[in-house]
Image (cartoon, rainbow, N blue to C red; front, side, top):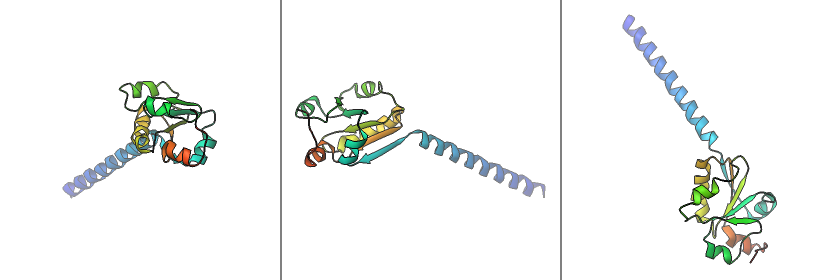
Length: 136
């Protein structure tokens, strides 16, 4: 009888411990923030007076960029240092040429503590295709 009671108590404590660990995991995931992929129309509307980062190379940037965008080369060794200077509690809008680089860049921004990362679907290619203004 005592052995059964001890075993039951041990199982109960183990279950409580697992539940507590799962709650901590969920909290950590929620604290990471969110990546929101948006269309060119949404990007144009929501990025007004916000931080916009063009993560293409300087050569690509010179070919044309979205008005108000700051160029921070994703391949530059100081990329994370440069983007970490922006306010992490405010939305940040990023784009590249086609949308491939922003996928991994967005994840890195979340790890840095950014809470809202807006990723332009299709990059500047889709921006131009939809006949939006490009600064040259």
